[in-house]
Length: 150
Ligand SMILES: CC(C)(COP(=O)(O)OP(=O)(O)OC[C@H]1O[C@@H](n2cnc3c(N)ncnc32)[C@H](O)[C@@H]1OP(=O)(O)O)[C@@H](O)C(=O)NCCC(=O)NCCS
Image (cartoon, rainbow, N blue to C red):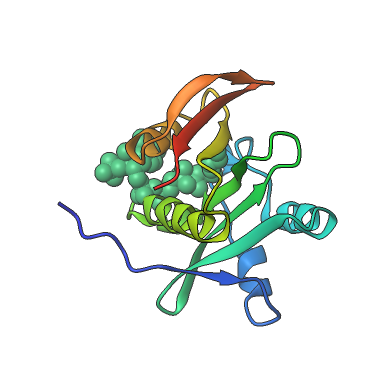
């Protein structure tokens, strides 16, 4: 089995902002996730959002953002993206697991984590299934996936 990459989640700061904004998904993935500038604007407006850069050694490889959703009081992973040049190396899975651990540490009593996924986003659906999420129907135009906190 492939060894999971050693990643860290780090707060967005003046030191990493340019690198976060330079991260890109592939062209055909852009309909699946907002660009990081838009996600950071959302985080500015909604202070419950927790945006994090995904670092592996000297390189920023991706971006993840979660929040305790005001509508259902559940933690949601609102965003996940790995730079197109770094995909397929286990960073996405490692980022999901690190986000779950951080969510668990922040809100120990909130038992269920949710994610909304575009129905055509087969790669992300496979990734979330492999990290314990199951489909729970539709929410708007997206598939709602849930799992218990670890
Ligand atoms: C989805 C995404 C985050 C996955 O990141 P990644 O670093 O490439 O994923 P990993 O290498 O950790 O893959 C973990 C598992 O996910 C699944 N997976 C990931 N990408 C896949 C793809 N394109 N097709 C099929 N399965 C895929 C596989 O099961 C994989 O496990 P394996 O390598 O043992 O087969 C990345 O493709 C991405 O940024 N996509 C664009 C943005 C997006 O769609 N975000 C999700 C919004 S809900």
